[in-house]
Image 1 (cartoon, protein in one colour):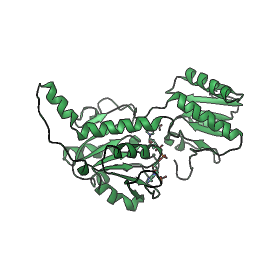
Image 2 (cartoon, helix red, strand yellow):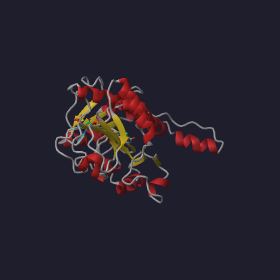
Image 3 (cartoon, rainbow, N blue to C red):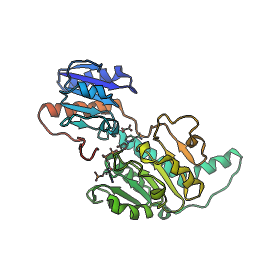
Image 4 (cartoon, rainbow, N blue to C red):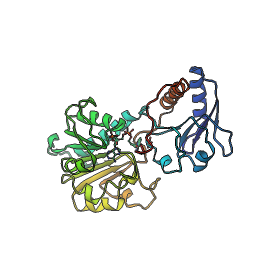
Length: 315
Ligand code: NDP
Ligand code: OXD
């Protein structure tokens, strides 16, 4: 069996050796190598943002494993019909995502930026406590990551609502008390009842540009945006006017239309925007390799696997 690895942002050697160890532990005989143009046909490939050429040449793959949760870098390519595309299914990301969102939420809600600025001036002063019921948190996307974030936010007693494509039942998700909304028709009521908006949607033609003047304008006044999904969700030029007009109190952004965020971009220096470098939930090597090798073993035994991307929905 031939297994290829491709990921320009990843150092390949530790991945190849982790893969070899995990495959041999699972009793799977395989040659593992970095994919090069013209390489012989492979059985499986592990990729992050592959070039079109990899898909064009590797026509016999039994599955293509994406080294991340979001598959938009692959679905935008010409994609052979019938190829199984498998996304990472948590693999240690949901805990990181919950940490990130809780940090951004609590930092804003508890006004830690203002305390820090005052401390820098040697000023000892209290700010009026805010009431959680006035700060409902809306989560766009109630998938693997959105559910974990909803649970974490609910654990701090914030009111939580979620929005998905199909209507989810909070009880089925093990999230009693979370208000569920769905579809374009359900979006206005969801937005109007949310003060902090967390975006955890996949980037698809339906969700491209979903964070814009009109939708963000429907949030409760003084709203706050946390975008941890994809830069393509936000119409970037709409954000600063909404903040400067006072309708939004600010934003924490981990993802951008162009990454790295270009120097000179106004988000870098806006006092109410916090920028992080697409780091909310990193791909963890050991967890990811264990998950993928487990799936290869299942596929080789002819068993079903979780995490298959639906080519029609695009996630
Ligand atoms: P999932 O596929 O598990 O969940 C996606 C959720 O979005 C589902 O609830 C789905 O609805 C909903 N959704 C999809 N399309 C629509 C739509 N058109 N309208 C309404 N709801 C929609 O994804 P994950 O939770 O694993 O990951 C979410 C995204 O997070 C990734 O796609 C990626 O872009 C981003 N990400 C960012 C990282 C970072 O470091 N910043 C790291 C990892 C991921 P339904 O339940 O009905 O299917
Ligand atoms: C992912 C990401 O999709 O890292 O996993 O953004």
